[in-house]
Every structure is written in structure tokens, then in C-alpha cells.
Picture 1: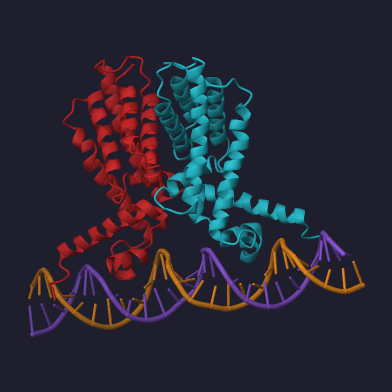
Picture 2: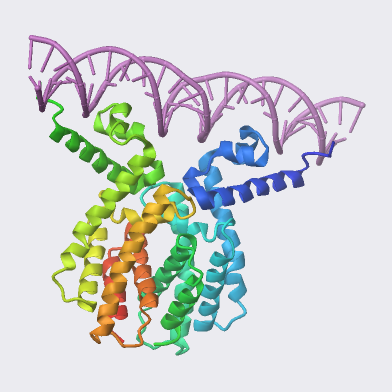
Length: 200
Length: 200
DNA sequence: AGCTTAACCTAACGATCGTTCGCTATTAGC
DNA sequence: GCTAATAGCGAACGATCGTTAGGTTAAGCT
């Protein structure tokens, strides 16, 4: 029927698998992600699915990497235009909150879910989560330090403490959106971020 | 060899199953909890394990209920002596943070893990999580309202917003303790709680 | 002593898990 | 046009999943 199996199509199939995996993992978790169910959803054989990755763990890592890449492309990338420091951070968290609120299917922030799922389970997935969170923390800390240097934040600001509390707001927003489905959650989260970054 | 199977022993076996389940679920999640593995750990047959509950879902609900009961017996119960309002809440969160920090095996706070695991999966387990979190929120809001009425907090305090942010601190503490194993996490969390309840 | 109840067992059930082994069919390079 | 590489399929593998049926043993009651 149709021409088949060029290199471009290979990559497209891989992307389709990743897409379905992201949707599935956002409800079932990265461990609840199943090759058989993926195959059914994609109308493929299990072997055809796993052949692109080699093993389930490799698939999990690829899915996690894709989630991080989408997040990076969406959230901090939209804040690069803002002035370094508090403005850029406010924009960043604003985008993050919008990203979590806008769609259930695409995983919101799969990274935070997987962080909780694998927090007590050593292995490559946990290591990848730690690496991604570490990079994120480094980004936040750099902006916070810039904010202190440019006197957008008081000189005595404890940036580590502030990063900790900012992370808490994001986690609360995620729970409020995904579990409680509270429509006020984004507003509350933005207010909390503003209190931390702009007020006190 | 030994006398067997009195009614008292039945309850003891059930408790042993719940104990092992709490330990297992704290690392594997409530869905990763497996009857076969429980049976192996307890040196029992699978039928002997599941016979006490009827189904895996019933077991999950029983484990969740046990986790909530232990939490309630441990955390807010130790704060009843404190003066209602900010003092009692500070004590409560202090106990919660200590409870999360003191042991990995007993689940820290299984409720928050399960909340994230089932946030996109409708069913009785999710309903039970929502009910437990609702009761907790009601407790916090009652204390916050008391604090406002007794002028421990400013009259214009947005108690819902405050409860949201307090929840965020707890989630951040959980991630910092279980995932990052940061020894400073309890200190950071207590500082954040104090900033919310006492300071400004 | 006989009977009922319940705890726990062994054994098996169908389903599904992740993975592997050929096989077919198509494409890319020569 | 021929060949090598590869995407994907079908089928099967051993393991484990949750659940059920039937049997054994002991405790409690009359």
C-alpha cells in the first residue's frame, strides 16, 4: 500500500512510541508503562516496539529524556527573553505552572512524578532523575544569585533555602492540579511564587 | 510445635501483612506491591496472604488506612498538648518532618507518595487518598482559623493560600529527604514553616 | 466427643509481563 | 539489478501477576 521504512520513518515511529509512552506514563507511571499496552495502542507488535530501545529500562530512560527535553524547550526557553534574575525566574515558574495546567495527557511534569516514583529505587532511572533535577536546581540557583548580585533580592538572601521553597510551591501546584483538580491552583501557585521572589 | 490459629493470632498475622506491605509499598508503590512478594517475605502462601483481604485492591485500601492511622497517631496526636493555633500547627509540622526524616522503611509519609501515584487513576484508592487529604486539610484550616481569631495571624490572612503553601513545604521536604537524602532538609523545612506561620 | 468455623496450605487457572528468535519486506548503496 | 541492512511481525519462552478451588489442621462450642 504505502512506501515503507525509510530512515525518516524509523525516527517517526520512535517518536510515536515516545509520544504514547509519555501519555501512558503520565497516568500509569514509568514502571506501570507496559510494552504490551504500548503495542496495542500503537497497533504494533511488542517486538516492534521494544526493538527501538532494546529493553524496558532503556525505553524508560528515553521517555524520561524526552519529557525533560520537552519541558526544557517549553518552560525555561520561553523565559530567556526576560531580564536575568527575579523577572526571568518569575516568567519561568509562570510558564511551568501554565504547562502543568494546560494538559493532562502530555504528562504535565512527568519529571516530578517520576521523582516520587523512583525516590526509593536505586538504578539508572533514579540517577537520570537526579541529574535532571540537579541541572534544574543549578539553573534556579544561578538566576537567584544574579538576582542577589543585582540587588533584586536582599543581600543576605539564603538562595538554597529560597530554591527549596520554590520547589515546594511547584510540587504543591502539581498535586493541586493533578489530584485535586483545583482550578484555583495556578493562581495560588503564582501568588506563592510572587511572595517568595518579589515581596517580602 | 506451637499452638496455632487463635483469633488473636489471626489479627497478628493481618498486622504482619500490613507491616510488610507498608515497607514494600514505601519503595515499590502501592501498585508495585505484590501478593507473591509479600508471601515470600512473610513465608506464607499467596492464598494465605490475600485471604485476609479478599483482593489486592482491598489490601491496598487497608494498607493506606493503616498508613493514615499511624500518621495520625504519631503526628497530630503529639501536638494536641500545644496551644491551639500557630503553636499547635508548628508542633504538628515539626513532628511530621521528624516522622519523615526518622526512617526510610516505615514509609515516611506513604500518603503523599500514593497521592502522586494515583493522582491520575480514578478508583477507590484515589478516593481514599482524597478523603484522607481532605480530613488533613480540614484540620489545618481549623487551626489556621483559630490562629486568625486569636490574632496569632493577621486578620487578613488568606488561610487557604497559607494551607497551600504549607503543603508545598511538606512535599519539598519529602522529596529532599527521600530522593536527595539531603541532611539539611528538615532544617530547611522547619525554617520555611516558621516563615509562613510565625514571621511576617 | 462431635461439629463448626476459620486460618492456611498446595495447586492450578488464565492473563500478562519482558524478552528472544526467526522471518518477511522494504530500503539504500553499489 | 544485486546485496546488505533494518523495520516490523508472529510466535513462543519462562516468569510472575491476581485469583480461585479444594484440602488439612487446629480452636471453640455444645
